[in-house]
Length: 182
Image (cartoon, rainbow, N blue to C red):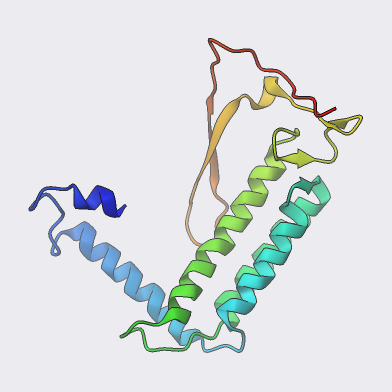
């Protein structure tokens, strides 16, 4: 991002009084105020650690449908608890590492839910994405007919599930094949 912005010509950036700029400033200030006003009992580090435990345990190298569904429920509950019980020290007027961490953890909670939704949607094993239900004699069982596409998720707003968009992958020079590790 910094490289991109550094290459912008002077005067080509949005003015600080532009409506888009003002909207972002308003949103950021509202989020900071919300994080500082909760004044709960658990640190952002507590939530970061809990998030990591859930995602590694249920959406790590090997995962299954039941674990992913549980992870989504657990992450949604953790996100709800975060927005009720996080304690962020600082004022928002000066450099505040815990405020920065809390903002990142809030984003990570949404991302963790989306990551588990993506893993749940992909009903195959491919590369590092090993669904234990989709294996043949311990080897990854791919489903190229259903999953030869790139998928992206679109944020729909706070508390909403993201929308999934796909774009088919077309291979002209290579053939899809299952890799054997034996």
